[in-house]
Length: 606
Image (cartoon, rainbow, N blue to C red; front, side, top):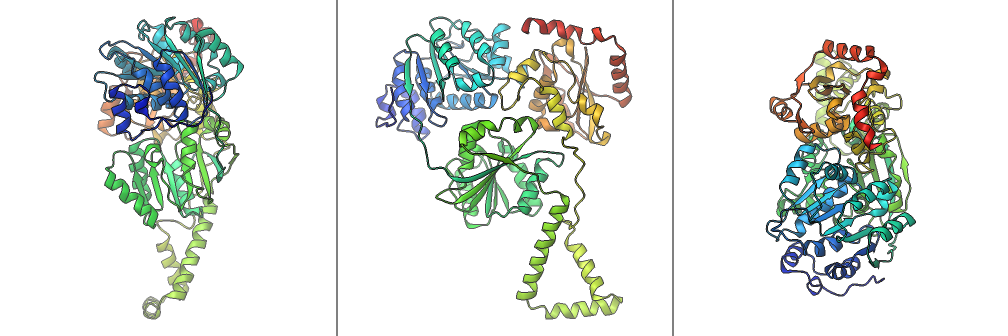
C-alpha cells in the first residue's frame, strides 16, 4: 500500500469519541498518510508493518487506534511500546498520555536505563495500561516479574531499524518471545533491512504493509558544526559564541523548562539580550517574547523543543544545540528554525566525546555533513573584545560631541599630574572589568577533559548511553562491566579537591549496583546534570561519589532520599583519609577476590 495523499479526516476513521476529543483539543483534524492507512488497519485487528521516514506521524499512527482498544478498568499492561532510546521513549509516552487525556483511568508508564528503579517499580505497581520503554530495562522488569504481559493486547516496535543498528536484535527477539501469541503486533521503521524482515516473518501474522514514499524537500542552506565540550563547559562556550559569532539572532535549545530560565538569567547577567521560552509560560507571555525576538529586543532565545516548533523568525541566523536533541526528528525541526525561505543559516551542536561518535545519525537525517570546530580560546576571545572596543571608540569619536569631556580630562590630568595616556589606560582598565581584554587562560585539556575520560572509561565497548539508547545503561544495571567511574582519570590527572565533596553511599557491587545506577539515581533525585557528578569509586559494600562542594541543605535532604535497586544509600560526607584507606585496601586484595561477587552476578547475562 503506497499513497502519500490524505483527504480523509480523523472523524472518518472510526476512532472513538474520547480519542477524537483529545486530538481535536490538540488542533489536529486531518491525518498524515501513514496515519490514514495505519489507523483503520489496526482498528480492524490486523498486524501492521509501517515503513515511513522520520517526521511522518508514526506515534499517532499506532497510538490512536491501539489506545482505542484498551480497557481502562483493567489495571494491567495491555499495550507495550519498545523504543531504541530513552529520549524517544519519553517522547512517545508523553504523546500517548496526551492522546489518552479523555480516557478516564488510563495510565502510561515509562521505563528506561539510567534512571533509578524505584520510581519505575512504583509506576508499574500502580497498574498502567500502557508501558513504554527501552529494550534493556524492559527485559530487566520482565525477567524480575515486575512487568507482567499476560493481558497484553498490542505490542509496538518503534524505529525498529534504529534498534537493529544499535545491536538490539537479540533483545527485541527476547522481548517478543515473552509476548502472548495472540497479541496484535505493529512494527514501524524508516527502512526495512533484511534482519527486520526476518523478525517480521517470525512474529507478525499476515501483516498489512503500509509504505509511505520518501518526500524529498528542498535542501535548506544550513551549515552544521559540532564542538566537543571540554573543560570550559557548555555555558562558557555559549558565552564565547555569543561574543564571537556574526549573528543576527539565535535560538539555543536546552532539555528542560527549568534550564531555559537558568540559562537565560545567566546570559542576562552577562549583558546579553536573552530570554526564555518554555511551555510553562502562558500564551500572552510567549507571544510577547517572540515579538521581542522579531523586533530585535531579544537576540538570544533559550527554548525547549516543543515551544519552538513552527517558529519562523527571519532574523534567526543560528541554532545552538546546547543539549543534544532527543532524536533525529527533533534535530531536523530544530535546525529548520534557520535557513528558511532561501536564507542561509548555521546549526551548532555541543557534544561530549560519546555524543560526538553518534553524530552520523544526524548527518543521515539531514543528508549533510557536520564539521567539527574548536571554540575560540581565551587569547582569541580577548582579541575579539579589543576589536569590538576599538570599533565602539571610533564610533564615539566620529558621532559624539566630546568637548565637555575634553575639559574633564584636562582637569583630571592637571589636578593629579597624570598624563592623558595614564588616564586613558586607567579608564580602559575600568571599562573592561566585566569582559576582560585579557581573559584568564583556558585550563589545560590535553585533548580530553576529565569528565569525558570518566565517560569513556565507563562506556567503552558498550555504546553511547544517551544516543544509543539504554544498551550501555542496561549492562551497567546488570553490572556487566566492573571498574570505577573515572578511574583512568584518577591515574592520569588529579581533580581539584576544592571542587567536590566525597560522599559515602551504602551500596556497592554486591548489591548489583554499577556507576550508571548511581549517576541516574542521583541526577534524578536532586535534579543535577550528570556532568556535574565527579568520580565514582565502587567497592563491594559501598561506593564513594564526588558531588559539587557546598551543597545547600534542601538539596542534601533530597540526597538522603536516594535509593538504588531498592536500597537506601544513606549518603554521608567521607574524609580524604577514609577514601584513600579504602582504595589501598582494594589494591592489596588478591586479584581474584576483587569484585568476585559482581562477576558471579554477571554470568547469567553473558
